Image 1: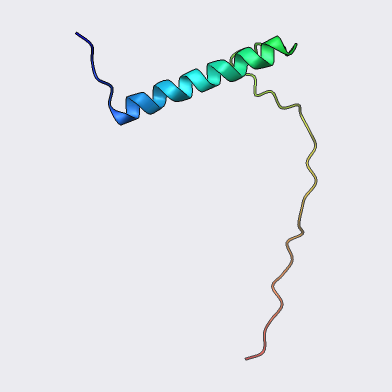
Image 2: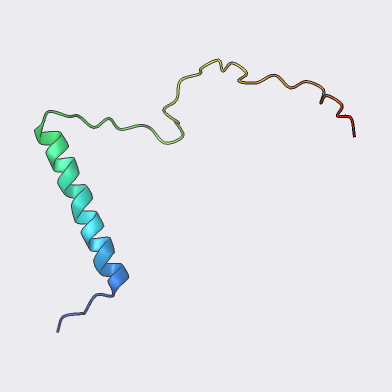
Length: 62
C-alpha cells in the first residue's frame, strides 16, 4: 500500500532532490565542502565603518 503525498510533501521531495542534484554537480566539478564547527559563524572579525553619521535634526520653519 503506497501513501499518496500531499502537495506540500511532494514539493518538499522535489526541493530535496533538486538540492541533492546541485550538490552532486558541484562535487563532480571539483568543488569541496568544508565542515564548519557548531557555534562558528563563518564571518571573520571585520571592523565595520559607520555608514552614516547621525546629527541633530535641522529645525524646519513652519
